[in-house]
Image: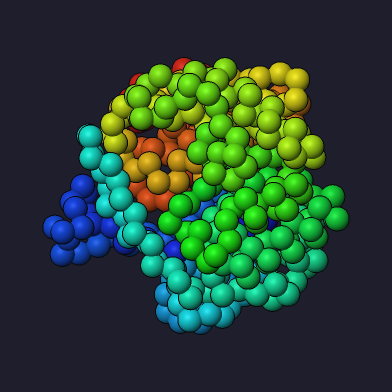
Length: 345
């Protein structure tokens, strides 16, 4: 069975119940999640050997995060302990024309204060086939960026496939370095690059022409081909560049698809109408988890891998919380055309 290692921060998510605003909240729903841990949970849920690496504080909240991961079958044996606190983010879930809001509280967290050299990457990567990181980790701090670069260098030297989700987060790049200063040295190690139009523009000043994600369901897959080609030209190690396509009709109704460029051919996938979104947080993570699973399962069929990733992440939007908890069979059923939502008896 393939072993996938993911690296990043898991956080405590606090959100007002239902669609309440922060100003209405007198209680919060609790979820543990984060970009890279969400990918690990997805892969473990699909039956893969998924190992998540992070740094957690030695307190009860750190233990809760560990239990949440263990409960989903994720290998937590290489998580290191330290730091003052667990990162937190607050989520106000949007509805209709009111968008969601996120407030971060993750300064001085275990991951933000991680130092290069604290993680034994040689041991972490024993038996590993794949390493995944995202642009969220190097956005936390210079030391987190240094640790991420250290991981990429070791994984690259060991011949492990490396993937990244560029994941630009404007609210996180606050420590004096810009993405343009940090990200290129990391991405140059990657075989698989996932990113949308904002990621490419903010990290590398690459952007599609005539694309406006605020104009509803008008996403043109071919408009992203120049971005994919530009990313592959900038990072020649990359074998595949993938973009998710989200058309935002409202906070409750999105269209969802994706494209993949392998250097010679542009693959497209069906577009799903997500007309009653339960929770869109983790949508990109569920896509990445589905893509890694599919590329490892059907390595000679990029078209099927893309369709699987899009279908898996479409289903995730029906699930409360950060992580995708659907099964492979449910994804395959949707790929086969069964999107009826009928009761299974």
